[in-house]
Image 1 (cartoon, rainbow, N blue to C red):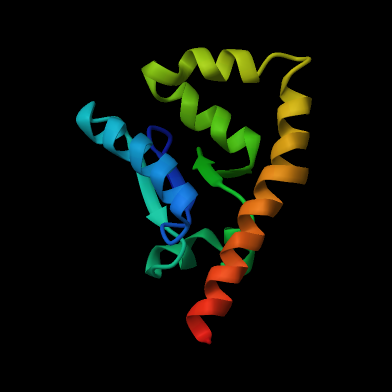
Image 2: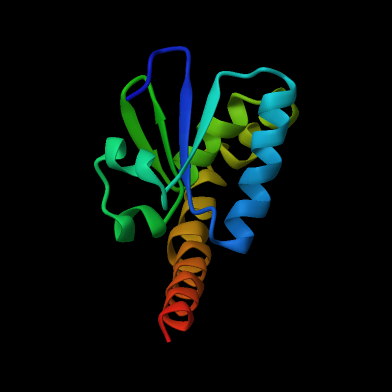
Length: 126
């Protein structure tokens, strides 16, 4: 999926929260010509990720060096690749904070955003 020099990010462009945050990162990466590609899980690019739409909508995924990283681990890779956010990766990646950040993301934030995603989809079908 990726070569060693490129990071790929899979995100939900239909999610207002996800698209705002990732849109900011995408604009930053493009302005600095960083080797980061952003794929919308709602488009044809998701097939290359080997994830179902439901799996992909549950959390952020980042691929680097052919390995898939989800959640906080994905954010850490993304932040480390962007000079402006390396400080954030250093802080969140600290041994005492990284597990806590992962727990908050996996148990609170990602499920909340995923439920909002399901409600948006249900309203769209109604």
